[in-house]
Length: 445
Ligand code: SF4
Ligand code: SF4
Image 1 (cartoon, rainbow, N blue to C red):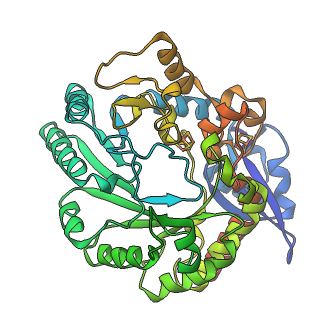
Image 2: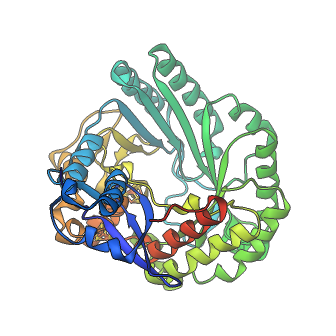
């Protein structure tokens, strides 16, 4: 059988021995091989059956894990195929809905300028239901993310619409999941009891540091009251009610020093493992440019993030580093999917969370079901955005686990937005190799 090396192999020497750690971003497998076998990954196409027995055994193992592939396979085309298939899959509907753009917080980096617009009207609620009703027969999965503003300022809209969407989905054997992105302040026991009846997959809550930092960055509107401890209490109530949540920590130069104290507080309060995620603060729009001077560059952030996760392991908030292993993607996010929309309280439709409320970039309205030619073209641009149009991405070995990065940033910046992972990959893979070696003895050859 004719085989060739995958174009997505990374290899790093292991300092202590004459060995190479090989990682493949297409199969997302890793292996350690003796240096003397490295020629198998450099020699172009060859017939595996013509190798001597010892080499043949190694080559077959490399083939099984995707480091070698059948000579006919064009991995780039396979990636392109799976990206196209995902984008045009009409069996899934994904809606991010903002029942209000108002917020009870005034966060220092927030780009949601429009805070005093009316909540979603009954007319828009009905239009959303009608839209789902028209599609549901052909759907296998509906995913709803409640977003804002602060979506829990309008709990009745959130709960009523969720119940009606669930009933519609159930009636047609369609899977339906809900997520909520909230600042966590209003997640009080009475509301949590109501949310428990909905099929909530996860609630994402932001904590940006210990109280001394969080309370300055994420302030209540018109008050200097402590927000941190109220949110922590609410999170503990979620644990009691067995509702899954993640804590997002936005990192920039002004809070990084306080993260250890935050992790200590979380560990002492019984936060379950793998519940904390870090994210680089990024300015998506002009509205949040005021926070730009405190941002870290992707390179700076990439150096810091693994140290933060190391701290998580030390403090028992993460079991090991497997959580960080990159996964193969069809697309970077849902924004370039044909049936993925963001809907604001007036029924205006967008493709991405960061576009909320900016009427200039809407692609239509769910009530009128009408779009201008320009709006239709904006939608087409989103769907047609592709890392396969970029020479840099086509040649990049990160492509299967990156898929060109955030399309919104890519379109705004006129080039694909590379991920922090590219600077961290070796560290993450080596950490996982050492972890695997400690647990079970890693397979080397
Ligand atoms: S396009 Fe970028 S900002 Fe928008 S949802 Fe996707 S990843 Fe997020
Ligand atoms: S965005 Fe950057 S890291 Fe991602 S595939 Fe393209 S070139 Fe590679």
